[in-house]
Length: 178
Image (cartoon, rainbow, N blue to C red; front, side, top):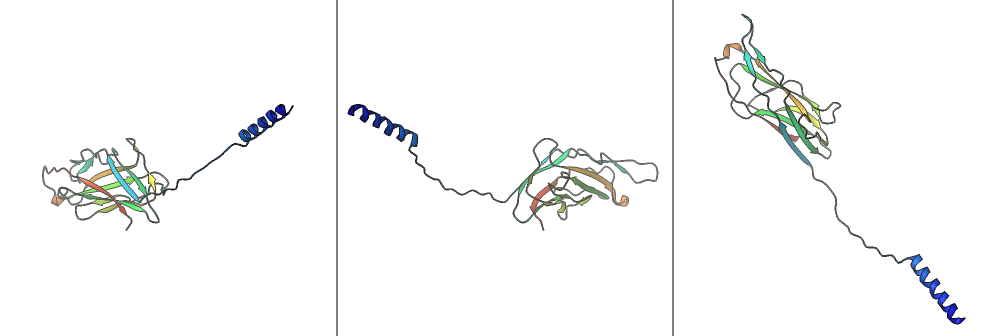
């Protein structure tokens, strides 16, 4: 009987030990954070913007004035400030007597910044095209981001020269809001 009682007691102790379980733990501590960042890419080109002959006595008009084949795609992480995107012609100047305007159309609702309407772009200085950009990511698909509309027009017909054609590069820069 003693052996049976002792065996029963051992079973109860073992069962209690397994049921109560033995636990152990340890910790790992590490820092988590992110840095302020601003990355921009330009997908697509404006194509050729050409001025064509008008009716007699009228100012030449542009064909392909509103090419929306270009999209600005950007990722921004900011603190208490916002970012802006500027544009500037960084190659040869436009042909004499012409003017290039850019209109951007960021995501509706201001989630990707605020558009600056019909901005004239020159070689002299960078101009704002999108302002007040909060932390956001526009996407990377072919038509994601802020679309860019280009408009070539005549600013002074008396300065125009026959058959002047140049390749223009417009550089977009994302910077802190000034």
